[in-house]
Amino acid sequence: MLVASLATPAVAANDPIGDVKSLVDRALAVVHSKEMSLASKRSEFRDMIERRFDLAGMARDSLEEHWGELSAAEQSKFSQAFNSIVADTYLGQIRDYARKQVQIVSQDLSGANAEVSGSMLGGNEEAVDLKFKLRNIEGEWKINDYS
Image (cartoon, rainbow, N blue to C red; front, side, top):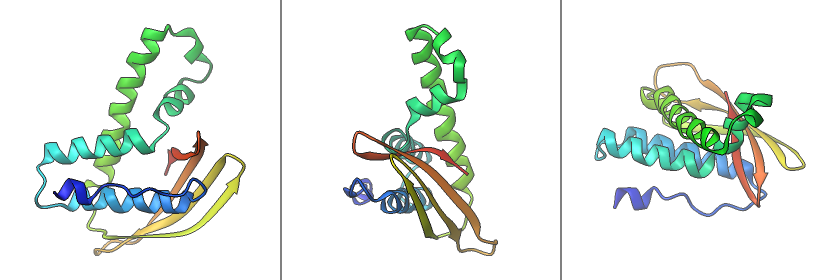
């Protein structure tokens, strides 16, 4: 039931701020859930990453001109490993945060690209700045970079 309550609501295709806020809120809810096992959290988090990140584009971009040198099987194998690393990295970055609130403060739209900025607040630590770069792929905003 908890997983169903965390389902990402449908978001308008022209609302990268809403997409980012929804994703981060959901990720924090999963990370801080007392009812979910670590394995369930990892699975849910990987699902969020796979649906909301442009993992194929990120994998391709990470190899730049070398991507074309790989066979389709090698590209697939690299993409699977890359996807796993991305999910584990982002889970590790927010897993130990006591932060409970995300404040999104701006968005910059440029055609099929957007940049959303904000901060994560809460706990006894200073606010952490967030910056998401997104691409509109077939009507959906997908994160292709995060810092």
